[in-house]
Length: 308
Image (cartoon, rainbow, N blue to C red):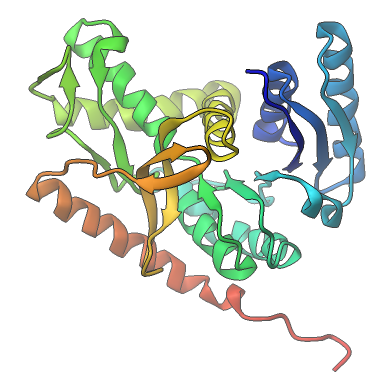
Protein backbone atom coordinates (compact mmCIF):
# COMPACT_ATOMS: atom_id res chain seq x y z
CA UNK A 1 0.00 0.00 0.00
CA UNK A 2 1.76 3.16 -1.21
CA UNK A 3 -1.00 5.74 -0.63
CA UNK A 4 -0.64 7.94 2.44
CA UNK A 5 -3.25 9.59 4.64
CA UNK A 6 -2.16 12.83 6.33
CA UNK A 7 -3.79 12.24 9.71
CA UNK A 8 -6.07 9.99 11.76
CA UNK A 9 -7.40 10.85 15.20
CA UNK A 10 -7.98 8.42 18.06
CA UNK A 11 -10.44 9.38 20.80
CA UNK A 12 -9.85 7.16 23.81
CA UNK A 13 -6.54 5.65 24.92
CA UNK A 14 -7.97 2.48 26.44
CA UNK A 15 -7.67 -1.10 25.26
CA UNK A 16 -9.11 -0.56 21.78
CA UNK A 17 -7.58 2.89 21.26
CA UNK A 18 -4.16 1.53 22.19
CA UNK A 19 -4.51 -1.40 19.79
CA UNK A 20 -5.78 0.81 16.96
CA UNK A 21 -2.81 3.11 17.46
CA UNK A 22 -0.47 0.13 17.36
CA UNK A 23 -1.97 -1.18 14.12
CA UNK A 24 -1.90 2.24 12.45
CA UNK A 25 1.70 2.79 13.48
CA UNK A 26 2.69 -0.59 12.09
CA UNK A 27 0.69 -0.09 8.88
CA UNK A 28 2.70 3.01 8.02
CA UNK A 29 0.16 4.68 5.70
CA UNK A 30 -0.88 7.34 8.22
CA UNK A 31 1.54 10.24 8.62
CA UNK A 32 0.17 11.68 11.88
CA UNK A 33 -1.74 10.03 14.72
CA UNK A 34 -3.49 12.54 16.96
CA UNK A 35 -4.53 11.05 20.30
CA UNK A 36 -6.90 12.47 22.87
CA UNK A 37 -8.36 10.75 25.90
CA UNK A 38 -10.21 11.30 29.15
CA UNK A 39 -7.00 12.47 30.78
CA UNK A 40 -3.95 14.18 29.33
CA UNK A 41 -1.81 11.64 31.18
CA UNK A 42 -3.32 8.65 29.38
CA UNK A 43 -3.08 10.34 25.97
CA UNK A 44 0.58 11.21 26.49
CA UNK A 45 1.32 7.72 27.76
CA UNK A 46 -0.12 6.15 24.61
CA UNK A 47 1.75 8.61 22.40
CA UNK A 48 5.02 7.81 24.17
CA UNK A 49 4.47 4.09 23.68
CA UNK A 50 3.60 4.56 19.98
CA UNK A 51 6.65 6.80 19.48
CA UNK A 52 8.85 4.02 20.82
CA UNK A 53 7.26 1.54 18.44
CA UNK A 54 7.53 3.88 15.45
CA UNK A 55 11.23 4.32 16.11
CA UNK A 56 11.87 0.60 16.57
CA UNK A 57 10.15 -0.40 13.31
CA UNK A 58 11.06 2.76 11.35
CA UNK A 59 7.42 3.70 10.85
CA UNK A 60 6.71 7.08 9.23
CA UNK A 61 3.77 7.62 11.62
CA UNK A 62 4.18 10.56 13.99
CA UNK A 63 1.99 10.16 17.09
CA UNK A 64 1.14 13.24 19.14
CA UNK A 65 -1.23 14.15 21.96
CA UNK A 66 -3.90 16.66 21.02
CA UNK A 67 -7.03 18.34 22.28
CA UNK A 68 -10.39 17.14 20.95
CA UNK A 69 -10.98 20.16 18.66
CA UNK A 70 -7.62 19.53 16.98
CA UNK A 71 -8.92 16.22 15.63
CA UNK A 72 -11.46 18.00 13.42
CA UNK A 73 -8.62 18.52 10.96
CA UNK A 74 -8.00 14.78 10.63
CA UNK A 75 -9.04 12.77 7.58
CA UNK A 76 -10.69 10.25 9.91
CA UNK A 77 -11.33 9.77 13.60
CA UNK A 78 -11.79 6.60 15.61
CA UNK A 79 -14.23 7.03 18.50
CA UNK A 80 -13.54 4.47 21.22
CA UNK A 81 -13.92 5.99 24.72
CA UNK A 82 -15.69 4.08 27.46
CA UNK A 83 -17.43 5.69 30.41
CA UNK A 84 -16.65 4.41 33.89
CA UNK A 85 -19.35 1.94 34.90
CA UNK A 86 -19.64 -1.59 36.25
CA UNK A 87 -21.12 -4.05 33.76
CA UNK A 88 -22.82 -6.87 35.62
CA UNK A 89 -25.04 -7.97 32.73
CA UNK A 90 -25.08 -11.61 31.69
CA UNK A 91 -27.35 -11.00 28.68
CA UNK A 92 -27.29 -8.03 26.31
CA UNK A 93 -23.86 -7.28 27.74
CA UNK A 94 -22.98 -4.59 25.18
CA UNK A 95 -26.30 -2.79 25.72
CA UNK A 96 -25.43 -2.38 29.42
CA UNK A 97 -23.24 0.60 28.56
CA UNK A 98 -26.08 2.52 26.89
CA UNK A 99 -26.89 5.06 29.60
CA UNK A 100 -23.27 5.56 30.70
CA UNK A 101 -21.72 5.94 27.25
CA UNK A 102 -24.46 8.01 25.59
CA UNK A 103 -23.52 11.41 27.12
CA UNK A 104 -19.85 10.78 26.30
CA UNK A 105 -20.57 10.03 22.65
CA UNK A 106 -23.06 12.90 22.36
CA UNK A 107 -20.49 15.33 23.73
CA UNK A 108 -17.91 14.18 21.19
CA UNK A 109 -20.54 14.36 18.45
CA UNK A 110 -21.20 18.02 19.27
CA UNK A 111 -17.49 18.74 19.02
CA UNK A 112 -17.60 17.29 15.49
CA UNK A 113 -20.66 19.14 14.24
CA UNK A 114 -20.46 19.39 10.46
CA UNK A 115 -17.37 17.19 10.25
CA UNK A 116 -16.75 16.02 6.67
CA UNK A 117 -14.20 13.29 7.34
CA UNK A 118 -14.74 9.61 8.16
CA UNK A 119 -15.83 8.55 11.64
CA UNK A 120 -15.45 4.99 12.93
CA UNK A 121 -17.33 4.36 16.18
CA UNK A 122 -16.29 1.47 18.43
CA UNK A 123 -17.96 2.32 21.76
CA UNK A 124 -20.78 -0.06 22.73
CA UNK A 125 -23.64 -0.51 22.18
CA UNK A 126 -22.06 0.38 18.86
CA UNK A 127 -25.16 0.47 16.65
CA UNK A 128 -26.91 2.93 18.98
CA UNK A 129 -23.75 4.96 19.61
CA UNK A 130 -23.10 5.24 15.87
CA UNK A 131 -26.64 6.51 15.35
CA UNK A 132 -26.27 8.97 18.25
CA UNK A 133 -22.98 10.34 16.93
CA UNK A 134 -24.41 10.75 13.43
CA UNK A 135 -27.53 12.49 14.77
CA UNK A 136 -25.67 14.92 17.02
CA UNK A 137 -22.80 15.74 14.64
CA UNK A 138 -24.69 15.79 11.36
CA UNK A 139 -21.63 14.12 9.83
CA UNK A 140 -22.38 12.06 6.75
CA UNK A 141 -19.66 9.41 6.92
CA UNK A 142 -20.21 7.71 10.28
CA UNK A 143 -19.75 3.94 10.59
CA UNK A 144 -19.72 1.56 13.52
CA UNK A 145 -17.51 -1.48 13.96
CA UNK A 146 -19.20 -4.56 15.34
CA UNK A 147 -20.75 -6.73 12.66
CA UNK A 148 -17.33 -7.14 11.02
CA UNK A 149 -16.07 -8.82 14.20
CA UNK A 150 -19.24 -10.92 14.41
CA UNK A 151 -18.78 -12.02 10.78
CA UNK A 152 -15.18 -13.01 11.40
CA UNK A 153 -16.22 -15.03 14.46
CA UNK A 154 -18.96 -16.70 12.43
CA UNK A 155 -16.56 -17.79 9.70
CA UNK A 156 -14.05 -19.08 12.24
CA UNK A 157 -16.76 -21.00 14.10
CA UNK A 158 -18.29 -22.53 11.00
CA UNK A 159 -14.91 -23.59 9.65
CA UNK A 160 -14.16 -25.36 12.92
CA UNK A 161 -17.56 -27.05 13.10
CA UNK A 162 -17.42 -28.26 9.49
CA UNK A 163 -13.68 -29.05 9.59
CA UNK A 164 -12.87 -26.91 6.55
CA UNK A 165 -10.35 -24.10 5.96
CA UNK A 166 -11.76 -20.76 7.08
CA UNK A 167 -10.79 -19.35 3.67
CA UNK A 168 -13.46 -21.58 2.10
CA UNK A 169 -16.26 -20.04 4.18
CA UNK A 170 -18.23 -17.11 2.75
CA UNK A 171 -20.65 -15.82 5.35
CA UNK A 172 -21.56 -12.77 7.37
CA UNK A 173 -23.52 -11.49 10.34
CA UNK A 174 -25.69 -8.36 10.16
CA UNK A 175 -28.14 -6.47 12.35
CA UNK A 176 -27.24 -5.68 15.95
CA UNK A 177 -23.78 -6.19 17.37
CA UNK A 178 -25.30 -8.07 20.27
CA UNK A 179 -27.88 -10.68 21.14
CA UNK A 180 -30.06 -9.74 18.14
CA UNK A 181 -27.29 -10.41 15.61
CA UNK A 182 -28.58 -12.06 12.42
CA UNK A 183 -26.53 -14.90 10.95
CA UNK A 184 -26.96 -14.84 7.17
CA UNK A 185 -27.21 -18.63 6.92
CA UNK A 186 -29.22 -18.66 3.67
CA UNK A 187 -26.46 -16.85 1.78
CA UNK A 188 -23.54 -18.68 3.42
CA UNK A 189 -21.35 -20.73 1.10
CA UNK A 190 -18.68 -23.26 1.96
CA UNK A 191 -16.36 -24.06 -0.89
CA UNK A 192 -18.74 -22.12 -3.13
CA UNK A 193 -21.73 -24.33 -2.23
CA UNK A 194 -24.68 -23.93 0.16
CA UNK A 195 -24.18 -25.61 3.51
CA UNK A 196 -26.30 -26.78 6.44
CA UNK A 197 -25.59 -24.28 9.21
CA UNK A 198 -25.84 -25.52 12.85
CA UNK A 199 -27.37 -22.23 13.98
CA UNK A 200 -27.83 -23.08 17.65
CA UNK A 201 -24.16 -24.05 18.03
CA UNK A 202 -23.05 -21.03 16.00
CA UNK A 203 -25.01 -18.62 18.21
CA UNK A 204 -23.65 -20.28 21.35
CA UNK A 205 -20.08 -19.76 20.13
CA UNK A 206 -20.74 -16.18 19.00
CA UNK A 207 -21.84 -15.47 22.58
CA UNK A 208 -19.01 -17.48 24.16
CA UNK A 209 -16.09 -15.92 22.28
CA UNK A 210 -16.42 -12.37 23.69
CA UNK A 211 -17.08 -13.77 27.18
CA UNK A 212 -13.91 -15.85 26.90
CA UNK A 213 -11.94 -12.76 25.91
CA UNK A 214 -13.45 -10.60 28.64
CA UNK A 215 -12.85 -13.17 31.36
CA UNK A 216 -9.20 -13.57 30.43
CA UNK A 217 -8.26 -10.07 29.27
CA UNK A 218 -10.96 -7.78 30.60
CA UNK A 219 -11.81 -6.36 27.18
CA UNK A 220 -11.78 -7.37 23.52
CA UNK A 221 -9.24 -5.26 21.66
CA UNK A 222 -7.49 -6.97 18.73
CA UNK A 223 -10.63 -8.06 16.88
CA UNK A 224 -12.39 -4.67 17.06
CA UNK A 225 -9.14 -2.86 16.23
CA UNK A 226 -8.69 -5.07 13.18
CA UNK A 227 -12.21 -4.15 12.12
CA UNK A 228 -11.32 -0.47 12.51
CA UNK A 229 -8.25 -0.88 10.30
CA UNK A 230 -10.27 -2.59 7.55
CA UNK A 231 -12.98 0.08 7.78
CA UNK A 232 -10.45 2.92 7.59
CA UNK A 233 -8.55 1.57 4.60
CA UNK A 234 -11.83 1.00 2.74
CA UNK A 235 -13.56 4.27 3.70
CA UNK A 236 -10.45 6.34 2.97
CA UNK A 237 -10.16 4.78 -0.48
CA UNK A 238 -6.87 3.00 0.12
CA UNK A 239 -8.39 -0.34 -0.92
CA UNK A 240 -11.67 -1.49 -2.41
CA UNK A 241 -13.39 -3.90 -0.05
CA UNK A 242 -16.64 -5.25 1.34
CA UNK A 243 -17.00 -5.14 5.10
CA UNK A 244 -19.86 -5.27 7.58
CA UNK A 245 -20.36 -1.96 9.40
CA UNK A 246 -23.11 -0.22 11.34
CA UNK A 247 -24.64 2.47 9.19
CA UNK A 248 -27.72 4.69 9.54
CA UNK A 249 -30.19 3.62 6.88
CA UNK A 250 -31.37 6.19 4.29
CA UNK A 251 -34.64 6.83 6.11
CA UNK A 252 -32.72 7.39 9.37
CA UNK A 253 -35.13 4.97 11.06
CA UNK A 254 -32.45 2.61 12.35
CA UNK A 255 -28.73 1.96 12.44
CA UNK A 256 -27.59 -1.62 12.04
CA UNK A 257 -24.75 -3.70 10.69
CA UNK A 258 -24.90 -4.25 6.94
CA UNK A 259 -22.34 -5.27 4.31
CA UNK A 260 -20.93 -2.19 2.59
CA UNK A 261 -18.98 -2.26 -0.65
CA UNK A 262 -16.42 0.54 -0.75
CA UNK A 263 -15.16 1.56 -4.19
CA UNK A 264 -12.63 4.41 -4.11
CA UNK A 265 -14.00 5.23 -0.66
CA UNK A 266 -17.64 5.43 -1.78
CA UNK A 267 -19.96 2.97 0.04
CA UNK A 268 -22.96 1.12 -1.33
CA UNK A 269 -25.06 -1.34 0.66
CA UNK A 270 -24.77 -4.96 -0.46
CA UNK A 271 -27.87 -7.16 -0.30
CA UNK A 272 -27.03 -9.76 2.40
CA UNK A 273 -29.33 -12.32 0.77
CA UNK A 274 -31.63 -12.94 3.73
CA UNK A 275 -34.41 -15.50 3.62
CA UNK A 276 -37.86 -14.59 5.06
CA UNK A 277 -36.99 -15.78 8.57
CA UNK A 278 -33.74 -13.80 8.56
CA UNK A 279 -35.59 -10.73 7.28
CA UNK A 280 -37.94 -10.95 10.27
CA UNK A 281 -34.97 -11.29 12.60
CA UNK A 282 -33.39 -8.20 11.05
CA UNK A 283 -36.65 -6.32 11.59
CA UNK A 284 -36.56 -7.45 15.24
CA UNK A 285 -33.00 -6.13 15.54
CA UNK A 286 -34.12 -2.81 14.08
CA UNK A 287 -36.92 -2.53 16.64
CA UNK A 288 -34.52 -3.30 19.47
CA UNK A 289 -32.02 -0.68 18.31
CA UNK A 290 -34.78 1.92 17.82
CA UNK A 291 -36.11 1.24 21.31
CA UNK A 292 -32.65 1.70 22.82
CA UNK A 293 -32.11 4.87 20.79
CA UNK A 294 -35.40 6.28 22.08
CA UNK A 295 -34.18 6.04 25.67
CA UNK A 296 -31.12 8.20 24.97
CA UNK A 297 -32.56 10.42 22.25
CA UNK A 298 -32.64 13.38 24.65
CA UNK A 299 -28.87 13.52 24.23
CA UNK A 300 -29.40 14.66 20.62
CA UNK A 301 -31.00 17.88 21.82
CA UNK A 302 -28.79 21.00 21.98
CA UNK A 303 -27.20 21.61 25.34
CA UNK A 304 -28.57 24.55 27.25
CA UNK A 305 -26.27 27.53 27.59
CA UNK A 306 -25.23 27.54 31.24
CA UNK A 307 -24.95 31.37 31.10
CA UNK A 308 -28.60 31.84 30.08
